[in-house]
Image 1 (cartoon, rainbow, N blue to C red):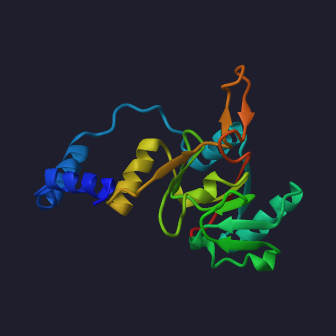
Image 2: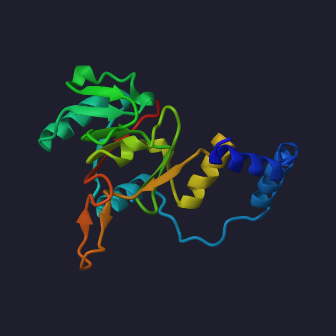
Length: 218
């Protein structure tokens, strides 16, 4: 038996009977959340899309808008060419059905590697209050695509823009039930001010975040 097997065996022994109570524990948690309404929040703008655009731009994100998902590949290609960036990208598998080659892009639907320069993703939802993207990990939405490449292009459907982070968590619980392995909040390009309080972009992730807003739901 390896050390790993030994540790897991001890955990399983200590958790004996836990599987039988899992459903009860989940029900108790759901009941607790339902019985505790959200606390006070700042007044939200009526136009969540306008608020999201304003806040995202203030965080150094750039934005474009297309009528529907079919227009996303062309918008992505135009952005990359305007920036002098390669028209090659790694994408979320859930976006693989779009006509990328017709827009002149070469894409691969897989998790990103360290040498990928451009990553194109969707998002679970976007938060108007802070201009933030919320992504959840999964087979069709690997996290590395938004974290490793120097340039991140994110597709945001207007109908998936919510007012606040509390609204985002409520939506996640309602639609997914079980929590995903990872939830990421992305507010503009990666940045740090650790060195002499000077803001530097791209220190721990993408240098650029370009948001393509999709007016119509798929």
